[in-house]
Length: 375
Image 1 (tube, rainbow, N blue to C red):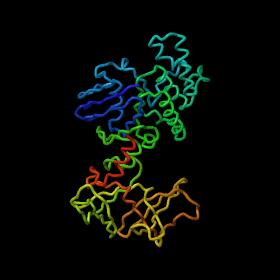
Image 2 (image 1 turned 60 degrees about the horizontal axis):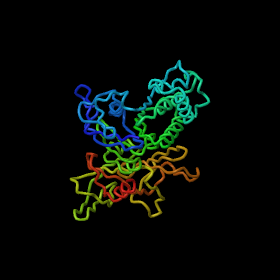
Image 3 (image 1 turned 30 degrees about the vertical axis):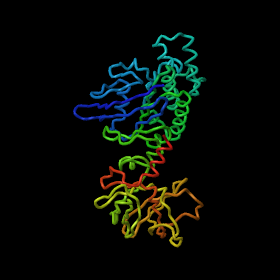
Image 4 (image 1 turned 90 degrees about the vertical axis):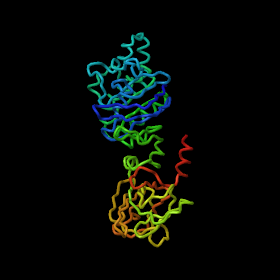
């Protein structure tokens, strides 16, 4: 196991900061994911950890060792790449044994450790097969076994599932997570797939333009995004601009005006004129207009049946469109196009940003409690 610490690391390509002043620690035994869109700097940061790139500013530490100038082959890392990078002419066994032979490990020890690794990835019975005749999922398992057989202090994984079909990705991400916990190996995982990141990670670093936007548990990243970029990139959110019609500085109580209705909220500070309300679709309640529930009334403008859930678009009287989701129910109970519904925005679970989308203004009690529980 290995801790990894970044001390104000910056990596340039020309005059562009591909990684910009990164400063955080990955804990020993942690499954840590670098998440973000293409070009955000996540793979650059991973390759800097590996020693393929050299940062221009800052230091990287493995435990108490500064590894800035340590060559890749001396960093005791295992790597799994997007394209597998296995040898097509070697057997499964010889592919996995390659790193051990390069380290001049005893022949009997190679046999024992390779078979142990192959059993972990459920390929022991295929030790003599040629990888070119095997499926993509099996080839990725070979690459995983080759990475762990050398017993690295750190496992680096760069988009390892992106070439697999959807069902196999789900199976493989579960297997990788279980294997990582079994081995208790510090793992840095790169992906652009937010669902994948939420499913496997202990913590996630969301990146954009070389900058770490937020580091937190999957639950907190999803429920309490620190800016609009994170809220938009992770999952699906409504973003609605609403004027602040009232604000009491002493109590923090405010009113946000939406569709002609004042909605009470608690804000951390006053704002000049308006805020952005970020609401997850599944947290919005839809009720019969006669139920007395909800703060607003709207009309169903679109219904999309998605199997395990139903997605609705609701048009408020001022033209604002709100997207809501419900778990699938009996077909006869589905809400219908043009049906009037009462809408509960559940603002206690919404995140309210300033008008730039950078500062969270919603009261932080739920957020602070969630952070304390995950600490």
